[in-house]
Length: 310
Image (cartoon, rainbow, N blue to C red):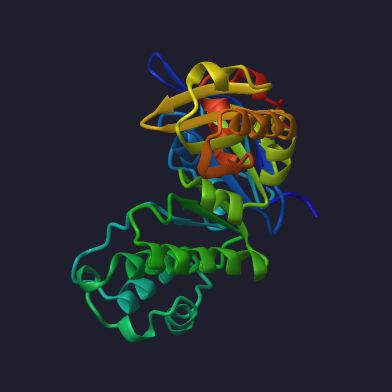
């Protein structure tokens, strides 16, 4: 099956600033694909070019086999978009909004079906400004499905939501995949990306520096395990620095924290050191590498962790 999204050599400049530089990736049918990166990395510009909100300077953009730059109207008709914040009139109701958006398309989904799908039946006739943040985001998702999209684009969909609303929205996004939809997700929430996304692309300075499934990126990254130690008495920095494999050592207020790529050897030596110093372990935590470790290594100058785009 051909990919739902194809981006080849996309570039976009704003004056002297090159926001996106030679970005290429593809999103398979039925895949949840995440775009990650710090502010200013080019995520939003990439999404805006792909959805036809901005004109690309160079590059090829395809959605559902349609050329976004040459067939903008046809391509837009196949895309559903839910932005970080919804801008609807305060006194419009979900039912009215769904009818209005549906009137823009030839074969829209009936409002009743979308109200049921996104758990908005009880709020169907409530004013938009009386909806909770989670309900407003669910309405935003419902509006993105009005046109039966082949691609759903979500830009920071859970930003600003409380934990309960965020969990509900995660369930909705996972259901999109189960129903066979292709999802392109931009997020700053690394845990969200690790749980939801089949693959991710990390952008730095307008370029993609790595593409792949989160678990594979973690496995092949040089990101190290992190050790946190609280002991009585605390072990001095000089002693801990001599342990094999210790890097990025920080000691403050009785807590020592460091990373290691040689966890078994480091922990064995640490145990021997604790016994030699007759120190009692108050707390000892060993945390495996996570997507956050990979992300920080790539976005904060960890050139050794970088992998070529796939």
